[in-house]
Amino acid sequence: MYLIIGSGLSGIVIAERIANVLKKEVLIIEKRNHIAGNIYDFKDENGIFIHKYGPHAFHTNSKKVWDYLSRFTGWYPYFHKVRAVVDGIEVPLPFNLNSIYKAFPPTLAAKLEAKLIDSFGYNEKIPILKLKEFDDKDLQFLSNYIYEKVFLGYTLKQWGLSPEKLYSSVTARVPVYISRDDRYFQDKYQGIPENGYTAMVENIRDNPLIKIELNTDYKDIKNKLKFEKLIYTGCIDEFFDFKFGELCYRSLNFKPKTYDVEFFQSLAQMNYPENHDYTRVTEYKYFLNTQASATTVSFEYPQKYETGKNDPYYPIPNDDNNNMYIKYKEEAEKLDDVIFVGRLAEYKYYNMDQIIARALEVFETVF
Ligand SMILES: Cc1cc2nc3c(=O)[nH]c(=O)nc-3n(C[C@H](O)[C@H](O)[C@H](O)COP(=O)(O)OP(=O)(O)OC[C@H]3O[C@@H](n4cnc5c(N)ncnc54)[C@H](O)[C@@H]3O)c2cc1C
Image (cartoon, rainbow, N blue to C red; front, side, top):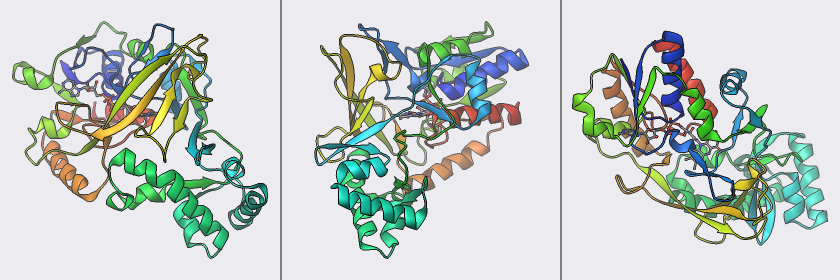
């Protein structure tokens, strides 16, 4: 029997492959009272799908991943858009040519636009650090503006750390997008499962060879279980009883609120780098274009992760954490019958498409 710890995307995709391809039995142990891990969603009293663990927009360039998921769900054709409130004005993110025209007077905006296109070409994403190095006062001004107004405040709230305490890759990724394309992602395939993420995951697990035990923590039953192979998608430090210390995560607190108005804001996701303690507000009805006279939004407050008290969300990308993870990974590699897969077991941020690609790859190479 194959044993899988965790019914998130990584666990459920491997379970599906074992049951449908190998025709073998799988038992999934899940400590929460529902399946689907962090992509779990449910309908509220107004028929709006709420993403319990934060907003999820699916996007991928992988035809293999898109085709795989499309066997289990139809798609609502949704393109995620994000704006940030900067100096009281809503500007599209990533910061692009439309943002420049929103944020600055027309003559300055036209000058910046011309300089960006002349220097880098159209449809290019240029990291703001590269702009800063450029020997041009206007482009340096733009780089500093984005760093100060859009990136710095959000990063301090999101991570509870100044950017220097994170890998420079985090800062290096912040781009100016020389384009009029307001979509947050440019991937070829984008959408939201038409009946929600949980229904999609239910369809993936729909095989009598797959059994799931909810409300069961692996650590409480691990000595009683027998298995041919164990696929573990929980926290790797917990698996090894924290013998090298606790890996640091950033946690989040979502405060949902229903308003008796048709719309609360102009799009699904509004970021607040400068004001408030929350980082962003998500209005869920936009994802599936749900028609309702009321609306539900969620205010997202980053917070310190405390083992056992709240949920681990984002691995914190710096040297100390990475070095500790490497020690756990070396321990994991000594175990022949246990495979560590997923965002918690590999201490790595994965998008949904990346985790599906990873789960498919694990199945193809290990089984
Ligand atoms: C706030 C936020 C927003 C995101 N938005 C997007 C997005 O817009 N687009 C995108 O592509 N990706 C997004 N992601 C990433 C996406 O959530 C992940 O790719 C995906 O959830 C990873 O699946 P997983 O199986 O690795 O982990 P999880 O979904 O966390 O699954 C792990 C499961 O294991 C269970 N478990 C853990 N320990 C134990 C134990 N000891 N015993 C039993 N069960 C256990 C957990 O309860 C959980 O159900 C977002 C992530 C976050 C944090």
